[in-house]
Image (cartoon, rainbow, N blue to C red; front, side, top):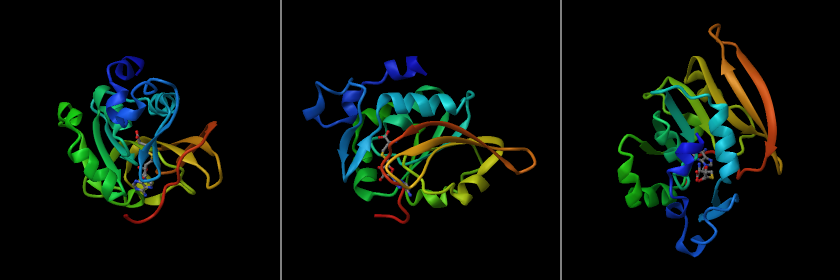
Length: 187
Ligand code: SAH
């Protein structure tokens, strides 16, 4: 995972005004009131996913596409959803992404997931979710895992939810983080 992060020029994902700061371990604005996650947070969530080669991974909250590229660099099949048209459209003209033709970008509401493309081995939510989205649990394969920052307040509890073969879920609790909110509907 650290090798994947090492291979990715983070300054490409930020406005050139941030060129000198792009490799600091901080979140930065990407427009529309959203942020590119702090590298530590990206690494933390990615590690919790325990990815296996060729896993089918659904990401909620494409934003700058940085997390999606980290996942693609690790050799998994990425499906990513963004609810803000402006941010979704920005990625259509982001030349660096031509290096990752396998990433599939969707404009939509992450609460709905991608029923026609599922089920997924992994789901990663990169915005603060007030609750575990039931449709995303439905779209997880048995044995699959979701990494989700859970909570509606100023900070969230990082959780890993595993869908057991029986269909029941197991929840594990990790550190606290601060994310922008996961909002319903498209914008
Ligand atoms: N993974 C991104 C982080 C972006 S911040 C990156 O690496 O840059 C979180 C993103 O989630 C924002 O772009 C926000 O618009 C988006 N988002 C919030 N709620 C969403 C929802 N219901 N469905 C899809 N995207 C959502």
